[in-house]
Amino acid sequence: MAIQIIKKGIADTIQDIGRYGYQHLGIQANGYLDYQSARLANYILGNSVNAPVFEIHFPASSFCFTRNYTICISGANFVPLLNEKSIAINTAIEVKQNDILQFLKPLEGRVAYIAIQGKIKEEAWLNSHSYFANSIQKDAQFEWEVSSEISNQFLKNSELLSSEIINEMHSPIFSSGPIQFIPGPAWNDLTEASQKLFLSTEYHIGMQANRMGYPLKGALLQLNKPNQYLSAAVTRGTLQLLPNGELMVLMADHQTIGGYANLGQIILVDLPRLAQASNQTSIHFMETTIDTAHKLYQQIEKKFIHRS
Amino acid sequence: MKTNFENMNWRLALLGDHALVFSLEEKMSEEIIEKIMALKKSIEILHFDFIKELIPSYHTLTLVYDINLFYQNNITVKNNQSVVEFGNDMLTAFNSAATNSTIKNAAEKIKANNNLIENNSFTDREKIIQIPVCYDERLGIDLENIVSRNKISIEEIIKIHTEETYLVYCLGFLPGFAYMGKVNAAIQIARHASPRKEVQAGSVGIAGMQTGIYPMNSPGGWQIIGRTPIKIFDKAPAILGKLSAGNRIQFYPIDFAEFEKLNEYK
Image 1 (cartoon, rainbow over the protein chains, first blue to last red):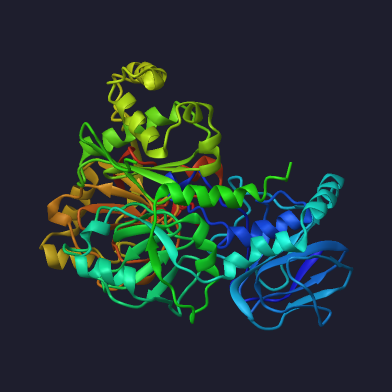
Image 2 (cartoon, chains in turn blue, cyan):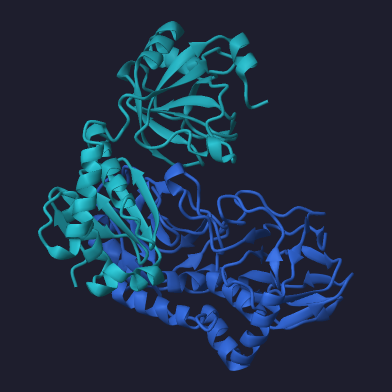
């Protein structure tokens, strides 16, 4: 094997774009918390952009490479150290046999990604490598297979990807600005005062944030009817109102259906920004339309399109 | 732009920027889940490549789509359709009221499919999945709660729980967890005020008018009346979809010795 975990992190997993097509059986989609950073790391290396990567939370795992690889770290800056020397993020880095990768401190963001150039050597389950429920343990081993096709793509992408372009793809994920949402089935069940509060006051991510959901601290909201609905499907980005008036944003590991008030859905383009926000970040919500959401989404997707 | 439609008694609404939800009246009813499953099958036969998920639950069908593929699809691009207009066309085609040429093709396909399965209910009325349950008190750890609260004997609870046929209204909470109903009022009981830290895989529980089976060890609040030795969910593809919405199931009692013999969770 070629990559070994020498120290266990708090909640590290392997994630890809997700496991779709099985939610009718109650099987969650899972997948990257911040798909933009994860895909950027893959893109920089010439990998398929939706390929599996390590998703790292702080305190992070430590890695030992038992063969040479090219890797790229994106997303949160946890001050990555290779053999105790600081290395850059959003940059292809060559690692050699016996090199050790560690993360020093959470400088910016909540979730980092480590992409490895090549293809993971591991069986997918239902077309996805995304972990669910469990996390990577100490002594776990992983292997990626290098291919000339990917190395060629790496060379092509390197020509396209100037540091300005990479920065254009990375920095919006760590910028401020309102989080946009589209009102959902229970939006009109909120009292008028609560709608106003939600749109005008600031929220913060609570301590218990994890891959299933991010609780929000801020103004408590009220419905003009009991908070009891027949369960229906929810998506990542669903703003769920809990019975105590607090809000929970459903994230990548959310259950497939839910019976609490569904106030709306954060648009896909803004989810990575929320995923990376710290507990201190002030979060404002702004209503948007599906047209805007789709336009913004396609603009970001176009940046990956050079990839053949 | 129109973002909501009423079509016959269906309602169509956005669920964010990558899902649509088709809904009927919000209630737990066999008639409604049958219509939901029928719409699901009708959309499935059209094989749109941008559809990632069709998730049924009680009175809703949620369609999750890929934004890029939607705007690359020949049909939707040609008709310059918005996602909501596409959804509305699906409803119109489903309701067989299609006269408009853009959806005629879809309507015809759906109609042909409906004719094929005309005499078969969408919820497989004929096929009843039999599931063995051991109602021994060592496994049915909350039987005593129902006995004391509902003034009923364990024998009667077993008789009532096993004589009913249950319909699967949806799956969720855990992979393979089926929400089934409706439980006879005589054995209905509210879930525990605070959930148990761990309910054993295979446990059969009651929560109000619903009954369900825990597919794996998990925290849970349902009142446990017994345990099935049969795996209802596993990563193996053959067991993956053992239960799905629209299935009809019936429980039958087995004793502890039989449970141990059949136990697939060992």
